[in-house]
Length: 243
Image (cartoon, rainbow, N blue to C red; front, side, top):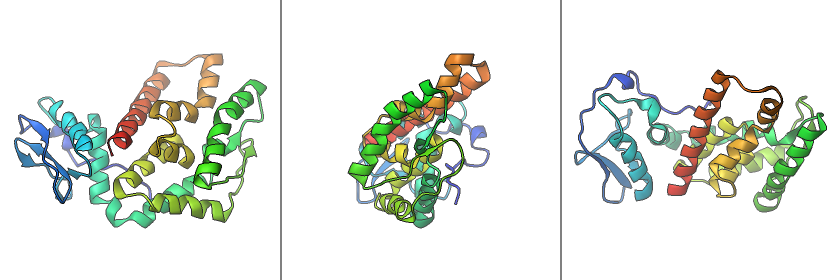
């Protein structure tokens, strides 16, 4: 299953129909996002209710910040919440398996075969995260040199899947978004568990790109793409912090 955040059809064209957005009172079903006092719904028709008031407040802020029309692209936490509520709960096994699949070629396991300065940077910055995963998560992945695929032990991938399945729906949804964003299940789990910030995890995921940019420069299109992906990483940081 390829994990994608929900994007309601034609959502960008919906005219704003609410004046105020706020987090409602916590109840048995979670904390709802209220639009003019009425509970917002997901595209699947379920209540937009979150497991914490802090997360509901962040999502309400996205709704409050909208202009004349709903621009769903500017609402990353809302989109992720839609996906979790409408899809993750019913497909937990498939979502966890997708996270484990990424771990099979985890970015942090592929060290450069040159230049030496890049390899040194990877060892210094990726090494401690891999050691943390081994010591704290019981997750030991094989390290490789170069870009040739190196299979990971089946027990290591099973461990990643088990770690993912142990999370609640909202944490699992966040990890499932973070994993392809970083190209690394390890970085995603480190962010979810507070070992790394979203900013740091994103920087670690693009060590090679940053190294090349230092040598050859960066064009405007690449800079814009990086900025957009960094915003996603910061949104995930806020997501996990509010859970």
